[in-house]
Length: 257
Image 1 (tube, rainbow, N blue to C red):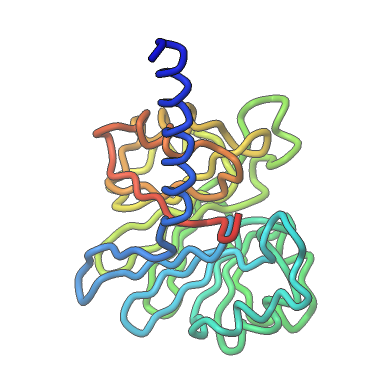
Image 2 (cartoon, rainbow, N blue to C red):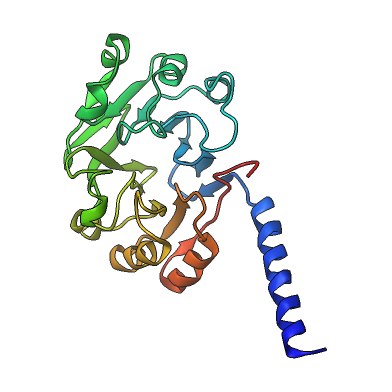
């Protein structure tokens, strides 16, 4: 067999392996913590739940991205356990959806930046605590710290200006869980300490590429990293670039794709 034929065969095998890998990614994971594990559930794109004991935290509930939009985007969220806390990072449509929030918020407390609050109807505003970058609040006996999320590359700053949205650090069972939101690596991210698990975005032009995300991991040193909000990015390459710097866990954020 010629070298060219061998190379072609190997490339096809890698491609098929990648497809198979994508088809078999789980949607769920656990993080060991005090008083029971933290259950992580990837819904899609940037939407997820964190569950610890009887506490359910819902993050950025929005319709799925790409493909045919569902007739009723609330259905999949109403099938989930009801949240006690809902975290909203910013006001883009892939993170913030009023009909979904009205369908699932119930007695939950919503935590959001001012830019999201200002776009809410009165019924949702009544349930919402506005948190600015750098502030820490306690909701349902849970510490929630808002972290600045923004673009640092000049050509991208139009997407996420500094001061608009929040990432969050949630402390559950003694573990510090960082949900970055839509951001590039920032001084605020690099200053984070003792992060047990981090959800990091990686898609251009809105956030950062996989190489920049891997560099961020090596700089602020979370123990576990979940790539999310990555539509089309090579998360296998990201995992290879991170190497031994963190435990990279790949979940299925784009079911059916």
